[in-house]
Structures are given as C-alpha cells and as structure tokens.
Length: 179
Length: 358
Image (cartoon, rainbow over all chains, first blue to last red; front, side, top):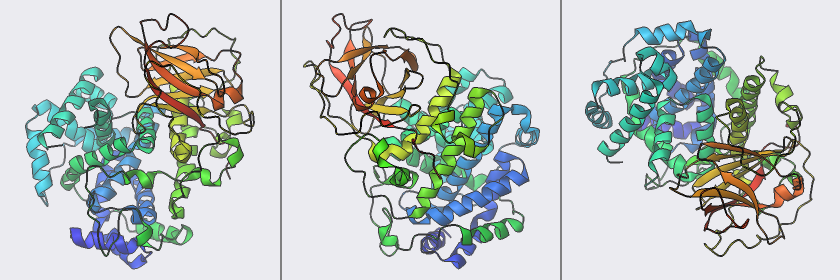
C-alpha cells in the first residue's frame, strides 16, 4: 500500500492523471474522514478536499518519501488547511459553526484501529505514559482540531493550564520517541 | 538540538492548537528558518501516524468530479522529477531525515520573482526560483486571504473584497501619530496591532530570496558600518513595510522587527531570545555610511515591544540601515552607545509589495 502510494505520487509529479485518480481513490476516504471530523460541515470538508487534492497535484514533485509517508504527507496538508479555516472562522464568531462544535463535542476520539503500524504503536506507547487527562487533550486536539481556547472551554480547564500541559506533553512525547 | 520553546511551537503547529495569528507566525518562521521547518517536518512524522485511527468516510462522488474539472485549469505538474528537490523516483536519495535543509522548499513560493525589483532593498541576487509554477500560484492567494482576514479583524468590520485589500495604500487605520521620543513604549499585548503584523509575517515567505543576514559584529568592539548598499533612496512609497529578522546565526532569528514607515512605528517581537537576568536588550540602528549607532530603545521583556520611530530618520535611512541588538545594563546603555556585546543583527526587507499584484 505504502510503496504503491509512493509510486503513484511519483507518477502524479509527472502529470499522470490516471495515477492521480488512483491516488485519490486510495486516500479519499481517510482524508475526508479527517476533514469532516475537524470541520464538521460536509460542504466545508468537500471544499477542503478539492483544495487539498489540487495542492497534491501541484506539489507532488516536492514529496519526499524519506521524510514522510504518503498518507501522513497528504493528511498533514489537509489538516493544516482545515485548521486554518476553523481558526479564522472561530475568531470572527465562535457561534458561527455550532454544527462543527457539536459533532466534535459529542464523539469520543475515534478508535477505529486498522493498520496499527510500528510507528503508531510507538507513538501510542509514548502517549500512554502521559497522565490520562493529558493524553485526552493531545488526542482531542489532533482529532478535532481544537485550539487551546477550545480545549479550555470544552474541558473546563484554564487555558494557561492547557498551554502548559500541551507543551509538557509534547516534549515528553519527543523524549520518549527518541527525538 | 533545537531550542525547546521553538520545538514546542512546531509541535503545536502540527497538533493544530495554535491560534490563527500564531499559525501565521509559525508559517513565517518555517520560511525564514530551515531549522524550524525541519522541526515541523519531524513533528509531522511523530504525530502524523495518529491519522491511522481516524475513521475513513467516503466523500460524495461529485468531489472527484470537481477536482478533475479543475485539473485542466490548473498548472500541469512539473515534468522533471530530476529537477525536484530531494527526490528522484528512480533512485531515492539517502537523505538524513533530521536535518533536511531543503525541506521547506515547497513552502517558499518565489513570489518576488515577478515583483518590480527596484522597490526592494538591493541585496545579492535572489536564488534561482524553482521551476515549478505551481508554487508561484500558492502564495498570492493565501497572502491576500490573510490580509483580508487581518484587516477584517483590525478594522472590526466585515472583510472587504479580497482584491481591494491587496494594496498597502488601504492598509490600516491611519491617524498619524504625534512624534515621540525614542523611549521604549512598552505596550500590553496589542492584539489588533499584532494581527496586522502577522500579515507581514506571512509575507516574509515571499521575501526569503531577498533576505540577508549581516555578519555578526565582534563583541565589545561596537558596530562598524555595514557594507554600503546601492539602492534608489526613497523609492518605496509610504505604506511599504519593512521587516528584519535579527539573527545570531542565519538560521535562528531571535527577534523580528517590523517597521511601519507610514505610522512611524516599529514593533519588535521576541522569537527565540530569552530574557537575560539583570540585563536589557537594546535595539540600535546603524545608518548606512554612518559610524555611530543610534539607540532605538530598550526591548521590553514582553513578547512585543512597540515604539515610535525618531523623527529624524527618513524612509531611505530606515531601509538601508543595519539593525542590531546589544546586551546592556538594565534600562539600557548609560552612554548612548552600545557598551555590551552586539548579539543580533539584521537588515530589513520590504514585506508588502509596493505594486499591486495582478
């Protein structure tokens, strides 16, 4: 799967539309799942899907398989865009997107364990060393795309505490994973 | 190893917990600082695996139709993988994963390649722009987005149409300030100001090609005048913004200095400089061709320090000057000249293109 995706991105970099379609077919559901969870609204998620895949099309030549796996590369692009959108909107009006907030608030972190890669096992082992509350914050932030302020509001924890916990947790993860 | 505060910023950028302003700041740093960009990549690797646990959901079929319809209109992907940074498909290079100085290349659209050159400070010629036209299309769009967003916030009005805000001429809020002394004006966090400034940070990406670090001054010797740089003085219209990253090493800006000639203010943001116990950082301007550094005041302990620009500095001087930060006794140099080591230096680049983009 991984090797095939790397090959496909290589072909996309050369302008191969058929390869692009196959890449889309192989990755669309994952990206859409990630986006829908963060953005909440299907129309928004669909919009960011388009933006992300067009960016993949244009930026395929910059993909470096020694630095990232194809799927993490694509998910990172999609998440970055989604979080940019959520942040800008929520600064205008946080009431703007009750849907997104509800979706995110009601569902627990997804645990649809599929391919449990070695890297993921390692990461989870390191996450597991954190206090449960800190684990939860890190996972909620990743899956729901919540800001510190949102984490603070949702979990009823002062924002400064969130900030400290996040920072400490992330640096602990770094140490645990061997930098 | 990269400094913890910076690494935590990279981590939170990847995790997604930063505010919009902090994200823009992080993105600007990624462009300026290969070390920071590598740090972000590393965090993407560390945390990225979490996506495995996200439930896959089939998107509606029309999403693909829309994507495919836009493929024709968008620039074709570059043809030659050999020209691509760091990646040839036939023969994947063995790249040490941590360092990767080329990593941010994709995020550095050579925007200024298309800008009128005479309005920017003369510096050594920018590196060859990347061949992929893809990248050139990225930034203008996002930049105008961010200008829109920031203006909307700073003016507390609904966002104006994108095309109207692209020009420095309509940039903010206008009342000309009375001149003030060079004393440090230590403000509380001025959120709206910072938001405007982050627009500039976003623009730094475009300026990397023009970015230049100035050799560090020998500690204790005081500054000498920097190399005189040929340029057309005063050619930038009012409203052009100037940004300098004040570095100790070329890869790690400690302060970002933003100069707004129109408002006659400058804002210093601490990036990675830590507070020195019992000492003050003092900012200096060394005018091109003039031996004596002029104090611009002590940099406050907070993240942002804003101050008025002394009246006797004109735009040409501000643009051509070298900026330096020295370590001084608390409250600043007693003598009016730097007494401590000069720790950071940099020169400004123009951050807002002076001609409207097309």
